[in-house]
Length: 108
Length: 100
Image (cartoon, rainbow over all chains, first blue to last red; front, side):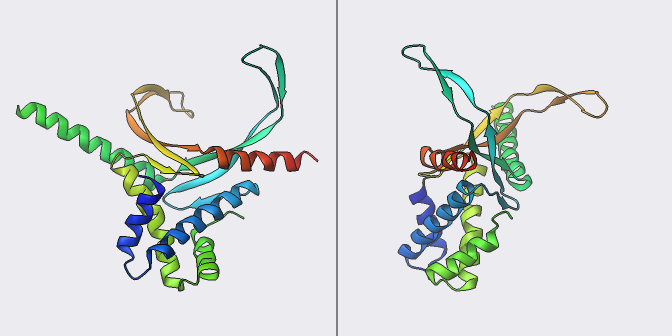
């Protein structure tokens, strides 16, 4: 699913809102989230997951072409930890698919 | 203070003029749509922000960290998030700002 598919699906379910409004709402939510992380703050969505920053210490890397050492500064990278409901729903569906496949192969 | 759904809805109310109920619903549905797509086995790509991918993990040996007892970790499907270039660049800029 892409961002535009997400917007289309939301606007079908929120028929009283104009497509443009839903599009702007999705962009505003994502911008709010990106701004929060780039200010060094966390995002916590119960049942979905949390976003935080992980520290990466400075290291010496190499220029892949010349092989010369390059010192790379410390940085932060975004990290997502799925919440309990998301973890369970994603894995539940996989288990059901497995079970269905097994009973199909037994039936044939 | 972490960002929550309530603050996201508040922003939609303030900036877009949605009413409070609509704002709350759209934030709730935004996350539910992503969960539902992942639940049915579909990757979610939000350009400029990042991708939510699915990985199928095989069973592997594990251990109870308290008792040291060996227990297999069952096969499972997990969600991973790969931040996009734009988000990574913005977050790296934050690291620059704290190094005096």
